[in-house]
Image (cartoon, rainbow, N blue to C red):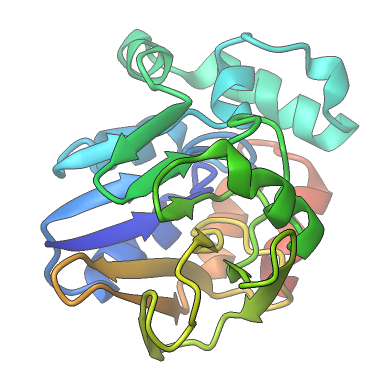
Length: 246
Ligand code: ZN
C-alpha cells in the first residue's frame, strides 16, 4: 500500500489541493491532525480530506476549534484564529472533528498528532524528547506531526540515545535498513504552515510493501491563501509567516 502521510494542514486548502495532486497515486491518506486552525478554509479542507480513504487524528487546534481546550494556552494570534474557526465550522465539520481519535495503531505504525506519550500536546522537537517517547509505543515506527518540521528520529543501539536525521527531500529511505536500528519517530512536516524556513508544503509518502519513506515538498500559491486570510480578517502575523515558512 502507498500512503500519503500529511499533518498540520491548518485550513490551508490551496496547499492541501496541491499536495494531493503532487503525491501521484496513493491508496489511502493518514492525516496526523490539526486539519483546522490558523487558515481560511476549515470546512473545505475537512470535506476534501473525507473524499479519500482516510485515517485522521485529532490535533490541539482541532480541539480548540471544538472548544475542547482552554484557549488561554494559545498566544493571541492563535486564539483569535481559533475563535474565528469556531464561528465558521459547520455542524457536519464539528461532528467529524469530534469523532477523531488522539492515538491509533495501524500495523507497524503508531499514529499521534504530538507524541505517543501525550498525543495532543507534546512536541517531539529533539533527540531527547524523541528518546523519552520510545517507551511509550510498542510498534516499530511512530508517525507524529505538531512541530511543523520534517524529521526522522532514530533510536540507536546505545540504549537511551536517539539521533535526528534532517529530512533529505526526495530521497527514498528504506525503513530499518540503511538507518540501522529500526525504531523510528517520523514527522512529515506541515502541509499548511511549514516552520523550517522552507515555505513549500511538506508531506511524506510511505510504501508499506517496499517499506520505504520519502519526504517531499511542493510549492503552492501562497499569495492566494494569504489574500483569502486577509479577506477573512485573520491576524497579519499568521498571514506573513506563510511566505517565510516559520
Ligand atoms: Zn499544528
